[in-house]
Length: 281
Image 1 (cartoon, rainbow, N blue to C red):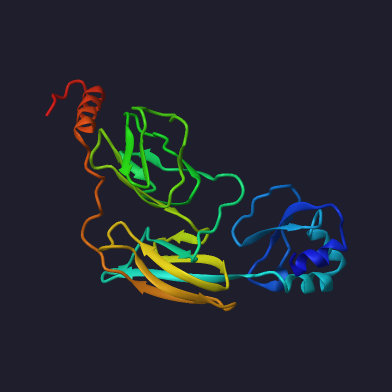
Image 2: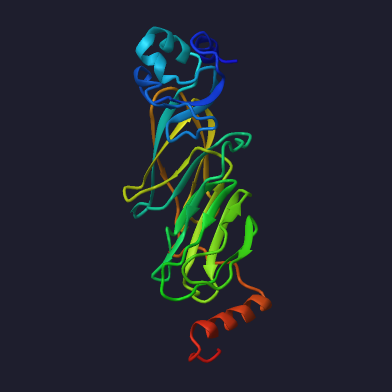
């Protein structure tokens, strides 16, 4: 039982699962909460079983008690990582902070999408937590057939246009390279992670992650990274941290795993179905 639990027990007696907003500034902590059982936290929130129906009620009645309670709760430390190569900052780099043991996923599985638009996967790089569900909606006027033969997740979706079948669950950590059996140039990458502390770099090459103080392994992956993902130790205190990492990249991104004879036959079939006038190669 944490100190926060002991303090809050004296205020309310109905045990529910609540989310307490632990922002970067302790004076603003608990400014946003939810009293719904099993409520899911958003960014910069930390879940716990609190003996209170609505923690936000305490803010207006006893700020002193609340401040003392939060002393026993680990606040998140903001970490900003800038990823670059010899040519400048890198977009779509996946940065993660990993602990010695995988952090079990909590709450319901998150569902995200990798669209197919203009015969491209959008986004081209997707970072998800283990157990997440991914939809592959087709927003083109032509049909696509999504597949992957990556060890972390092997799957094939039927030829479709518009609404897809049920989402695909990614329950094993690793890199999943996604392709289309009809359009060979279509490539997408899904990075499945065993940690809740991750993000993807934007146009400025920066990723911001909020994580509790402690020891981590900082990992950086990019579609054009040369060799394995960059990996280096990282120790977080309660102070904000900024880190710039440089990775070696190649001119091209890794391709989809080569198909076997059965898949080649399927590709030929799907190409003919998509364009009946086009002869077989």
